Amino acid sequence: MAQSGILIKLFWLAQFVIFWSSVSSQDLKKLSEFSPGKIETVSVDRMGNFFVIFRNGSIKKYDPDNKVLAAFKKGEAPTLLQPWYHPKIFIYQKTGQKFTEYDRNFQNPEVHTVDPSVAIKPLLVCPTNDNKLLVLDEEDYSIKKLNPATNQVVTEFYVDSTEFKEKPRFTFLCDYQNLIFLLDRNSGILIFSNVGKKVNQIKCTTANFGFFGEELYFLDGDKITFYDLYTEKSRDLKSGAGKFVVVTDERIFLVTEKDRVVVFENPLANQTD
Image (cartoon, rainbow, N blue to C red; front, top):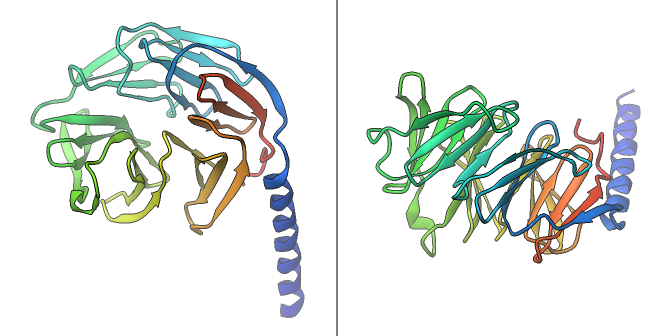
């Protein structure tokens, strides 16, 4: 019986390897393409909506079929936008050290300011899954988890700046599945435990990253790399070169160097379990 069970597991493992090999080598099915404007960065929410942040500070929210669901006009591009914790849309502006929560239509703003007692130079601020905030202080590279209701620091740790060959360029911070992720455009993605222990560092020069089930994904040259957060194994999906990528349950949005958005069908749909 034990040998039979092993053979069954090996059989299904072989089927998965065959499936993934065929997916990674095939051409993605292109669904559409459009040019929305000069793109600064992109994001996505849990509903599969695609957010485009433009260099002039405006933002547009698209559904999986490229229909504009909401638009926002602002004079300055946000330092960080995090719409993941639907239906709230979180925006942080380094200028003024303000973070604002909007509803799903960019309305009914709730504006707050990072208290100077929390961080001297708050570079990045983002929400967490348990309704707290993460604050990266550029002054000492500390990351604090803050209870915004009481302004109390729950946990704090420091990013070791001595390990960087050049001054880090931190552009994105978030938490996911009890881990903290920090993007350094010069060296890659740093991964910490929820108490600040460094778990891993993925060396790359990607401009953004996201999550697909239990995998972290990012654009690496002309392919999308999927890194399993638990097995630490990676797999690739050839997509073509670009600046940014967003993967949802239904779609893959690839932003090219010329700011065109190419929309593909996601061949990994229903493979997140």
